Length: 171
Length: 323
Image (cartoon, rainbow over all chains, first blue to last red; front, side, top):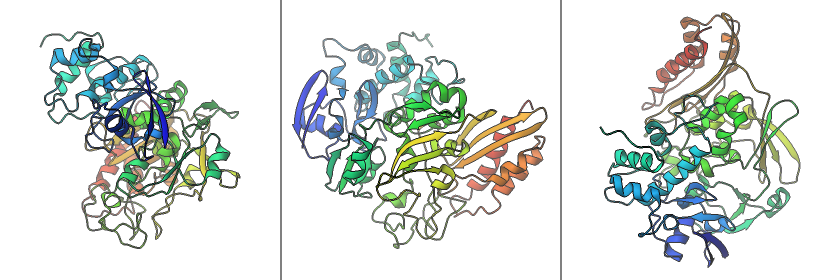
């Protein structure tokens, strides 16, 4: 069936099997292979995309359900010549080893900072009736949907803190 | 994944008449369809229905549209202020990405994470009625200790539903013929008995449209979740508690439990034991013992009995400190 998707500011009309996940539509039909397929079951976060500004697991949603939605993949954040601040921070802090989870980490981190910006609380927020502030604990909790089997977590947290405009004190 | 016909409904009435399996967030349904545990022939996309608002009701409560996402619900100022136990339960569940997609109605309907339900090469009465239960005598560390049957020992995985159980939530539905009805959440879920594949009172084609919360319960709100990881893991045991104290006495108590049974567990006699009493360790121990009087382990999950006991005692101590 036909579906028109708005991805990274461009419209694409696809004729696809309704079973196609948003992730597979991007990777297999549009050559947008930045988003990775890790588990394909919503457990690892490698496929994270922004839909209408919110991060989701693109492997657990059907492409045909996203007509008229605004979709951003890692390719839509920055380019090799002009990195998004989150991408630049991951490079600066070496926030990866093998790199497979990295696009999902970066897109998820961008979405996560948006959630903090909107005042959304998390499981580790002390008082959810008032506001919430960025901290290492908040980042770790909020990024728990992105696994890194190389365990680059400390540098990922540093990168996110940097991108959020917080400088980390030298150890 | 098996092929299916996809259609998108623009109204509740159209969704009902299209006929088929409703899909909203899809985070659990699509996962199960990939594994061919779920094999719907028709999928009706309900994500465009106007059911994504949280409105105040005349009796001072809230009406939550079935499509409100878990993250929007958790972050809603009214929920954070007046129904903190619900916000806390939602934030303790899943991951940021999943909460952004999962809907309120869908969360209530999510299926068990019993490994035998997911593994189609194994016997499961919930997936294939009458085939048997390989969880009994199998790997059953996460399984039920209350209300289970010889046909099924699965647990309900939701955190949100546990808090809603303590809050006396009401499920508003439209049946296939358009008839509207209300089902108190305490009557919504079924124990497995000999029909573990029937998990709730919804009829064929019936659609959850809203979940209603009565006016807020004042008191100390807490959702305590015990799990294998600090984040992004299902509960082994969880307790949702709203405890009000007046001077030296417990005046109101609402308690619901996750990870223990086929449904979010609520036991009014525990609450009756607590109300009117002064908070003290012996009282909490007696309440926990009453809760678990009929608890039965399956071997690997025997630890849940003392874990549930200690968790409840700890929660009651926290909720009454200063009283």
